[in-house]
Length: 424
Ligand SMILES: Cc1cc2nc3c(=O)[nH]c(=O)nc-3n(C[C@H](O)[C@H](O)[C@H](O)COP(=O)(O)O)c2cc1C
Ligand code: SF4
Image (cartoon, rainbow, N blue to C red):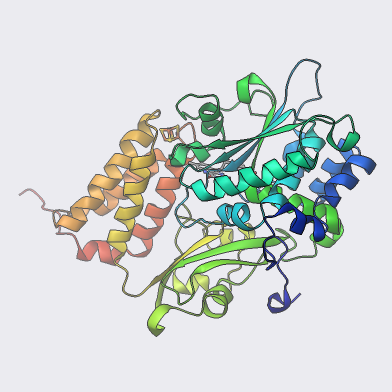
């Protein structure tokens, strides 16, 4: 399908779609009703698995496969679904649009997931700064309760589940799935060691699945179209619609829904109106601040799928793309990213706590003129000692962008440094 003729499925342009009557008039909640009446939980999981909805929170894991990791239901042991709407990765602003414009699609998806995994309660963890969208979600949820879609004996069946909206307190680490669970339990969001994985021991020690808000919003679409039709949308290896957040130095920044697997060049030059003021492209961070930057020559021919981006050493992440033009000071850009990860490190692991601090400090030297050439390799050495040595992936998320910027724009770091003094 040509992306130009694509009609949005997650964020269609329908006025007042956040109102339940409008959502229902478009066939909303029919998929959930049908699932309750006609499908077993196992059949739903199989359908979602076959659709290969790749998790939209960053890692791209098959949602149905993840659901299948939940152990068999045991009498007296509650089970949970946590919907991750913490959305704190710089460059990412998609979940909030779903909560704003189509909250019932997300609620319906969460309900189908809850039925498939037979969970007792769904906790929706939303970034605290999203105050307006939290209100909108709560209103939509109240409407869904009033219609009998949520609560006890839903639509006259034996299935019951509750949905609670939880407001986050404003830290990036609350979006890491085990940190999120700690935070929901009322503690500091210190990520937990894995294993045990959340499906075995999650919220309050009970089986739990964590899915991104957008991932869940894809579920009713799969149920309406069928897995086979869903997999025909976009790139076969990463199918379905994708919400592309495009920010930075483009003429029309914004959130755009198109099939997965778009060419980055089409997104920049056609969808987002090109680089501002006709300037030259300097680099593209494809999927949120933690994904390695691409040079203009690496952008050519590269598609927004995990597989295509892996070939050029980067990742799809959240598909929140940062576009940088030729005026960008890459040393300052690297410093800004390092400062973010230093601020957001929870401090549990030494390589992350100290490493993010050192990355920031060393980069600062390039800005205030006290760096030497040796500091360039020192940055890379610190990065190498952080990666893969920590409880959660925040340290890796700090390393990947800095390493790529230093390696690909090394000349700018050399220009900002003094030659290393060799003792005589
Ligand atoms: C530091 C850190 C922050 C994260 N923040 C988010 C977030 O804000 N939202 C999100 O959905 N996933 C976030 N993730 C990924 C989650 O841990 C988890 O993989 C995801 O919610 C799973 O959902 P999915 O399988 O539907 O993608 C983060 C991961 C890390 C390491
Ligand atoms: S890697 Fe960083 S953020 Fe993650 S647990 Fe360790 S110290 Fe905390």
